Image (cartoon, rainbow, N blue to C red):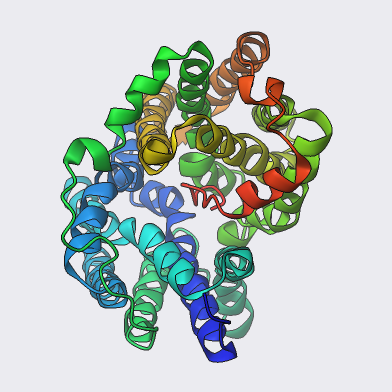
Length: 428
């Protein structure tokens, strides 16, 4: 590929910045807003699952875009549609209509993760992609500034209100207009015939005949169930604990992630891929143990601990899983296998949202007009699941590729950089 011009680099970096700010500015505090509307645990689970359902369907929309439209035009259309849907959602307070609008917004938004990566990699040398993608993490962190600016400059408290949805619509509008200024990126798979089975990564299920691959996929699914307790309900919990600036507080995890991600190739080189992933699961256990202890003893420092370990969880376990799958899958099935992980993440998030939503609903009492939630059962359950998964994964999983001498430091660094993560979540 020819050398990337500074103009192209700036445009691609700005694209990433806007695209990840778009979701972070409103979704992080969504359950706090829903709770303020008087909705219970199962209603929060339904609305919070809009992202998970968007994850499940986005490969299909992505396939359609890959084969029919220039990527930058598709990105513009999806962002503008997201803008309209978020604006409409500000006018709705009933649970089911709000869910339908946010689901439609997520069906438009989630495919943009793949589109932005495709656009960036089409116009930048491979070694420069991580330097462009990191602006997505910066945009995620910068989203938290909205609440601070609103409070300090205008004296407005926006957490727990519909204002973040307006902010999301504004960023979506900016992202949609800006997409039209991006370099032309023709449909990368125009004319190709691919079935839904291929796009969803389901053909790669054949790889689960290998015991260790099956353990990894199952562990990935189970890990996402407690992961959703923080991802979906963390803001509502902190709001109940009288925390302010929910978006910026939750985004401290992504801020730390930007730096810890650089340690992933070092960890793999030193201790191997398996134990790198085990460290990620240990951080998952630390998160929910910290939430449970903090809630029991009212120690705010433990809540910050739970937030700050996000980078270890996402980088060491989730990105580690992608690296393993990329190495294990045959060349003709690598993309499908990564699609399978994306699908599994959505399923795990969906299951976790409703399991945790049920726990919240079962431990909610009404005092006057206010609903009081006992959060401890959710944190205890997440801690137990994380502990069991940590032990079982350490005992049952092995990286056969490492035994064949395929785990050199140089290879890992390249693999880590060029394997985009499926979640904001986390790390978006």
